[in-house]
Length: 206
Image 1 (cartoon, rainbow, N blue to C red):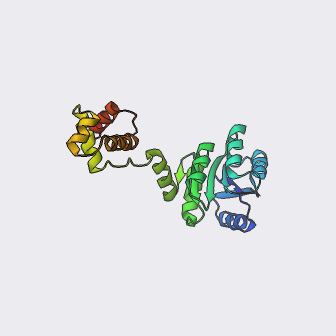
Image 2 (cartoon, helix red, strand yellow):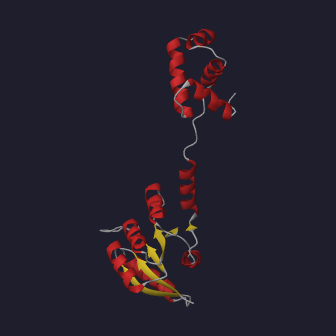
Image 3 (spheres, rainbow, N blue to C red):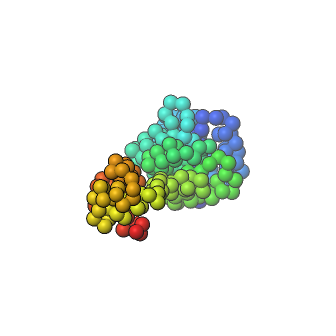
């Protein structure tokens, strides 16, 4: 069973190169091409390919807009993004719009073939750099560590000391203690002293 393709890219040289690559492989059939997102939508509706190879940055309707429209139309085709860009602002919208896979244009030919096969089966395919981008988004930024002085302030507060008591114990002003507490709250993502102490215990800071 052959896998039918629609190639979407605003550069004719890229489309020709991809068509030639797949034309020489009996496992694939290129049904058509499109130069922008709007044409991609029209051709996908007409040709009903198994896989749409979708560029992202195109004039008019871009790749994300086209992917969104294809999903809203309920077309059965799978979308494999094939682009030069792997930044957050490219990867996340494409995946959220419904792309099955995301590959960079510098991928070797055999890797592209494997990606198309997997995409046709509905399996997620991500190039390593794209996977790293998504993981960093899921994990979020690492929490900033507390300084030694901030830990001292938090330990004293955790033992029930007031700001004034902490200031006296550390030979600093009460205003400085308050400043340290504000920094602690921001780093721990909390809004008050009790939550700061609780979070510090949870993270094993004491």
